Length: 543
Ligand SMILES: Cc1cc2nc3c(=O)[nH]c(=O)nc-3n(C[C@H](O)[C@H](O)[C@H](O)COP(=O)(O)OP(=O)(O)OC[C@H]3O[C@@H](n4cnc5c(N)ncnc54)[C@H](O)[C@@H]3O)c2cc1C
Image 1 (cartoon, rainbow, N blue to C red):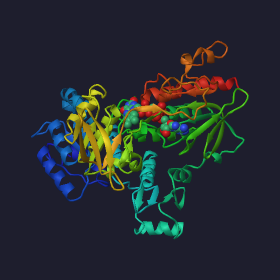
Image 2 (spheres, helix red, strand yellow):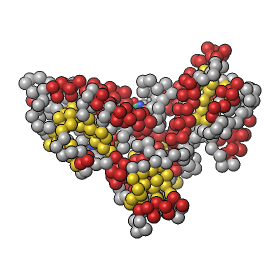
Image 3 (tube, protein in one colour):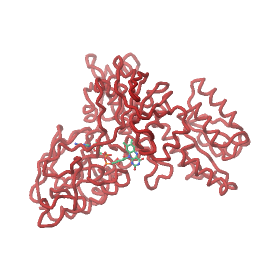
Image 4 (cartoon, protein in one colour):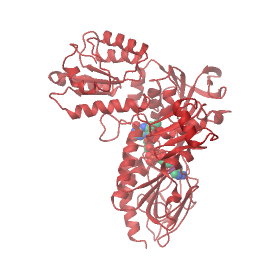
């Protein structure tokens, strides 16, 4: 905590955190840098740097830059003195936009400034969920070796916001859980707040243990609304549907949050001026939907739909049971394209990841990492990974990032020396003994093998809706057609479907899966909420 006079006002303001964190006060950027170095060298962690807006020996920009080199994972807060706020505001706003720190706030002008402390707690909570080992565990896993299965279970739990920890079989917790499951039970074992330790063979098994199966629903029940996919679009449809009195079920194949759930920081979502991690946004939306009565089944891909109509419900199939629904909202989003390189499938989850894989980032501390892709998701992933990895190389086919990535991300990356860009290049080979150890990168005809323990593939997305019947019409790229985009020969009574209605009455499509959608969180959640009146109108006309 950097302040002009040690132990002054700023330290008083942070007194309430002294019970759970060690507070250190310093008086210069240099002193802070040295102290941070000592703490790290002694095996400590730094959660948050707080600095006044004017420092005696460096600009705040420079100071945060230097501290970031010592502790890349800490959150960074500038507090502006209220007497200097007007002159500071423009300068500080610019630094924030460039990602030089995470927030700047006006210093509290009195006691119990809870707005200020809400912001501090958000920063600490974000650090706690992405950097620190969880203090509270709701799920425990026993495993001795890292496999694609244990990696995917950890990723699933992380994306579901379930604080979890893995224990080796010889540890005290490991031994206790093995006794609970029975001495012959194969590893890995998973124990959750919902049940005792049991062997698991898939993410499905974990999902069933925690969230149940779709066939838990009475077979004769017909729900008003079944939503396929729990990304922002599906979550918004669930909140609005259930809050408007519809019996609502969400079927999600992987983890709640969809693509947004893999985003380390969403900065452009309305109402979150300091940004919010996609996982936390998704968990809040899920809790909101549950509050209104939505039931979620997570870990169950919808495999097909038998179409009903105004007299009969649609029947939505999963491998864990079927759901009968009067209306279906398809919110199944898009998936990352695969990289076609020999051997890559075997290393997926063992150093090779599609999407930003927030969980994996933590495990790559001190290693070299390669990110493939030039879009905003690749930029966000690189910035997050650079908190942990010793180097992050972004491999792109184009000559520059500017054509595909937002300026604010390019700017922020330019301040992170660990990130470099390899233009006009592509990854052509991967390998390692049981997990990724190297990648081969081709640049202008030359192939270079370089060490890499992480390869993150953010290659652009494609729709995935082979499970939908042919009669739900799609465009040439596979995105679902809605409203006036549906070909005229599929219109009923000469009228186009409603704006979010597909070519099949009672089936709606929202979010990234919809042809012509904007591919943003706000747009997806806007469509998810806008579809509910259309569902109501459809239900009004069904029996
Ligand atoms: C890393 C990253 C960062 C991003 N950052 C931002 C940002 O900062 N700001 C912004 O506005 N946008 C951002 N985006 C884009 C944004 O996340 C998407 O536009 C948004 O998530 C789309 O929401 P959706 O609900 O339509 O689809 P998705 O988020 O793709 O969710 C679809 C869900 O459906 C599930 N599903 C798929 N098939 C099935 C099936 N058969 N059965 C059951 N479930 C199924 C999937 O598992 C998934 O959970 C980012 C995207 C990524 C990948």
